[in-house]
Image 1: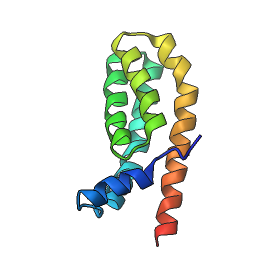
Image 2: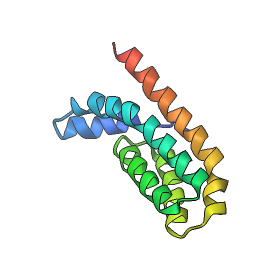
Image 3: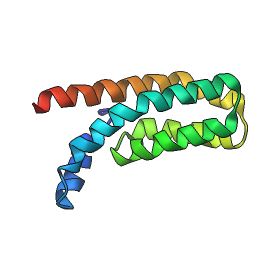
Image 4: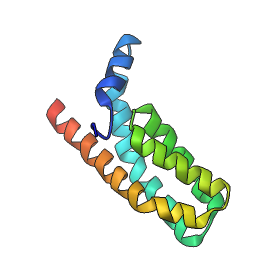
Length: 117
């Protein structure tokens, strides 16, 4: 597959809109917020609090879609849906893949930062 985040496409879209400067800020914000949100998601899953699972997955997904972390976004959508339906087994089935996608997104974004210096 391609990169975990279609950052070039995100950047191109923002450039076209004349707001390319938001790209780095969006990436920084996502790197800053997402670990805490993923932790909250994990806690919610462990507690079997599917309402909270739905809420956290939705929040992380919005940001993922923003920066074009499409694969991560799709997995979050699946978790959000399963949480909404109270499908605990379904949520847990997607989690390993979600964690992997999350790590790939974070590593990718962190690497971007250092190459942009």
